[in-house]
Length: 200
View 1 (tube, rainbow, N blue to C red):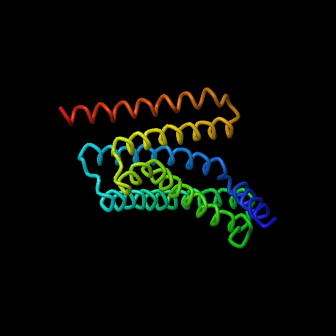
View 2 (spheres, one colour; view 1 turned 90 degrees about the vertical axis):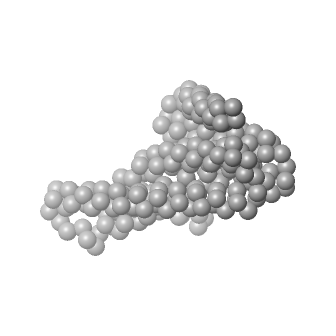
View 3 (cartoon, rainbow, N blue to C red; view 1 turned 135 degrees about the vertical axis):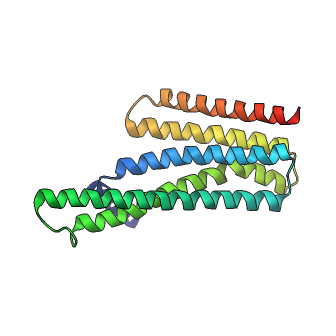
């Protein structure tokens, strides 16, 4: 009951501030970026033959936190300016000061929500994709097992993002998933070619 009321309140805030579509796009795009960053970092460890758990885990955590901070701060600055401009246009249209209105409070809250979505989606994607490799370094397993696990997680995550995109936009989900996975496979091939070139 409480969760449903909270979800309804968030929907209302996003509708009033006209940011629901923006939040969805931020989530998908930054999760996609985070997945690519995570896979790139893992391939970097693999190519450099750096498999010590402490080094791998702390570096991945630092990359994820840096990406989250960058995503949050960038989105906060841009969304705050966008919301201020939107409120100003609305005030000019209705000739009313909206400083103490529900529109003003909704714009402030939505800016925080969108910024969190922007930052956390990238962080979670990086951690998800890198987890198999980090786990393999922790249990001293073969790094090949870890890199394969990370690649499979990367492709699975892209498939889920494609499904999310298709469902939210009400278009053919199979087509979207196929296109997103194609991009993912191309990225994996590029990383593998890079790894082969380094080892020559």
